[in-house]
Structure formats: structure tokens, C-alpha cells
Length: 453
Image 1 (spheres, rainbow, N blue to C red):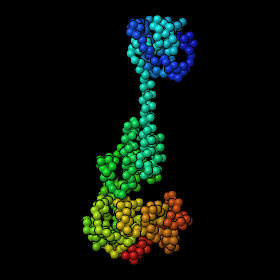
Image 2 (tube, one colour):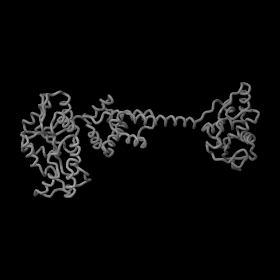
Image 3 (cartoon, rainbow, N blue to C red):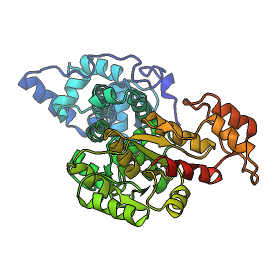
Image 4 (cartoon, one colour):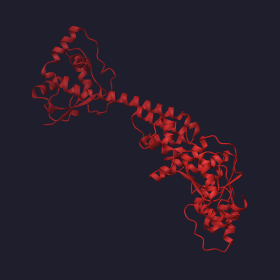
């Protein structure tokens, strides 16, 4: 029959808890002389001691902090089971699983003819004890210490001085466990991400070129965990939703001055010339002579920026949101038009680089967009970079509403909380709840472009 080991003498009924009854000396082997060691090996080499030298040892080596080890009695033959029962003082033969109290075994070995403890007996008879759980614990502690050091070092990276908001992002990354668990891999991933962040925002370049500048490899940011983590950081810094689509990723990179390539990011212009005799200046001059709009790629804008040109600038450059303004200006004014740049919604990397170049050359940028919430968000970014409003005030909005015209579309989406250049604009738009798009005031804009040459 099966007997509850906890009820038997020599087997206290304490829980199987590694910390219960812990004795730091239990797993410490003593040094014994050669004759004594030979005696221990001779005795324990007998088959009747297999329960101790193989089975109990194997269970204990799984975790040397244990003081109770489970033993499946079915793994022992009758002679071995009898020998163990005699040694432990069991009164009843049993089956099933018993819990062996190692402190009791140690005490009995010391009182036996072997006159030495459990750890010494097992070490002399079978070699140094291993500790699987202890080894894992030490490795886990070392890994945890290394990981903590990684995050501490990351907090001190220059990128966090450049972008203080990254401190909260690092905390979010640490708790999300999206980076590799291996400390070496995690450290390298964080290093690569922070190196790139320290170089952002960029003046305007293609992704492959930026990757080459930062990492020396053109395709380093095409895909994988590093660009994914980098985009999460950019999303955090720009207060943008986490990217889910290719369009989201393009938009996030653009917020930092990076285009997916140097040809798909473009900027639409009309009647704009740039000083110099290089290819870009000649392209724009030819477009002005023919009265046609021109579209420059990011690569073309960069070519102009990277090749020194003679001084010269337009005192005023007008900036609009929608291509329809450029189209109408070209049809009405041909080349006799004030310089005009169209951002086509949120400015592309090419548009931002061109506008930055014009500002640095001394041009005064004047911006107009749609009177809707998205238009105000774009205008806020434009004005924050140095542009001034162009017919984009509460008075301009209300003047349009007072002019008889077809029904205006309702305002949609989430309202903007404020327009820093005119505190009355958002309240006026909220009150009237209609959008005034650039197409509704296009004739007024064209007259400005005509009379302000």
C-alpha cells in the first residue's frame, strides 16, 4: 500500500519549498584523506546504494537549494528499495512517490560507518555536484544585471539630450519587451536606434542615403526590428499613431526629413527661380519662361543645395496647400506670377528642404491653406518653421462666409484647439462649422500673386 511519507518518522511533513529548512553547509563537501575516500567509494559502489548515488543525487542536482526531493519508488528494484528503507528507518514498505529529507539523510550518513555528510559522500563517489537551477539563477541574475546596465547606458546616450522625450519612450520599450531578450542583441539594437535618432531630424534625404550616412549600409533601415523600433521612437516623439501601413511609415519618416527614396518625394512650384547656372536653376528658368509649373524631386533639390550657388533670393515666396492654386495661377498668369510653392497637404521631404533653403537665403514665406481642421494643423507646422499667414485669419474666414456662394462643406474630424497666429480663428470656425477650401478663394489668391510681383 501507499503510505504518506509525511506521516513517517524521519520524513517531516514540511512543504517542498527550497527555502524551508535550508542549511548552507548541506551542499558543501569536506576534504577527506585518500584512505577515507577509498572507503566511501567502496561502500557506495554497491548496487544497494544506487537509490542515493544515482536517483537522489539526480533529483537534488536539479536544484541544490532543495532540502526535500521527490523520489519515484518505482525506479528502484526490491533490493534497492529495501536498502533505502533500512537506512532511513522506514517501518513500512511503500510504493508511489516519497519525499526524501536530505537533512535527515545527511545526519544518518554522518552517524554511519562513512562518518561524513551527504555532499562529501556524493562528491567522492560520483564527482562534483552540479546545480541546474542554481546555474540558471546565476545566469538569470547576470542577464538581469546586464539588461539593467543596458537601459542605464541608454538613458545617458546623447540622443536623449537631443530628444528629451525619448526617456519615456525607453521606459515604454523596456516594459513592452519588444526588443530581443538576449542582452547583447538588445544592447546592439538600442545602440543602432539611438545613433539614428541622434541624427534626426534630417535636413532632407532618401532613406537609403540616410542609412548609409548612419550605418554605412544603404539597406539597413529597409525592414527588421531596428527600423521598427526606430519608427516607434519617431512615433513617440512626434505624437503620431504607431505605423501600421507603408503609407504610415512614409509619413513618419517624412516628419523627420527622410523620404523613402530621392525621386518619389517631390515639390510643386510655379514662377520660382533659383540663382545660379546649374541644371536645377536652368530647369526652373525654362519653366518660368514657358509659364508652366515645375515639379522637383528630392534628389534635384538636394543637388541644388549641395552645389554652391551665387547669392540671390526672392523677397517673398507664397506657399499654398493645394495644387489647384498652382494650376489656376499658371492658367491665369502664366509666368507673370509671384513665386509659388505648393506643399500638397503635409509638406513632403522635398518641399521642406526647398522651403528651408529659401528661408536660409532670406526669403519671406507666406502661407495659405484650407480653413478646415487639417488645414489648420498644417498651417501650425508651417508657421512654427518661420512662415507668416497669407490671408489666413479669422477676418479672412468670415469675409469669405459673407460673400454669396454655393453651400460650403461642413467641418469634419477632430477640431484643432487653437491657432497661435490668430486666437479668434478657431472660435470663428467652431461657430460657423463650415470649411473654406482654397478653391473657394482662389481668385483672391491669384490677385495677390498678380499684384505682388
